[in-house]
Length: 211
Image 1: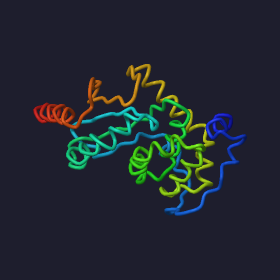
Image 2: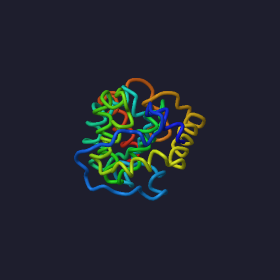
Image 3: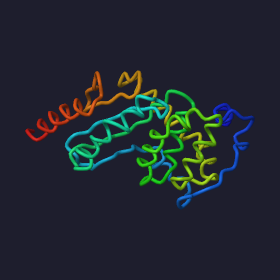
């Protein structure tokens, strides 16, 4: 695991990451294992329609989806209790793997705000000379101290659970790229615009109401 981190950080050892200073929002310890590796769900558990997303934090199309169409869908469908979103990591490179790990090490209530922060600032941290330091700095804003960040990045069980989930999605769901969305068990093919998603969600809600 440390070999992975050292390569990702572009330094001889992970502990050589530059120390950071600045705002720290209520620093916390790592969540319990069941929370670290559990599902990430946005919306009411009893929502009649479920959308599952497979995404990579370094994927520009994922960032465009999260800062565009999904922002509108969240307001109209998720926040109103009609749809729930299951977000699953499908990292396409080592930097995305580290971002997935870091996000999962935040307090559960800060997870989705942190997801949005990562996508909105994607070009800055993903292309930084030292991505590890850039991610750690973002983590500080979500209450992840440098000590917690270090522990997170060296958590082998968390790393392996993310890779296992990605490989399972590729094998059983035929996920090949990101973002990939499923409406129920059906993969959504084609363009992911807010207008197109509205039509599909309205149709799924109508069918759910008719059952």
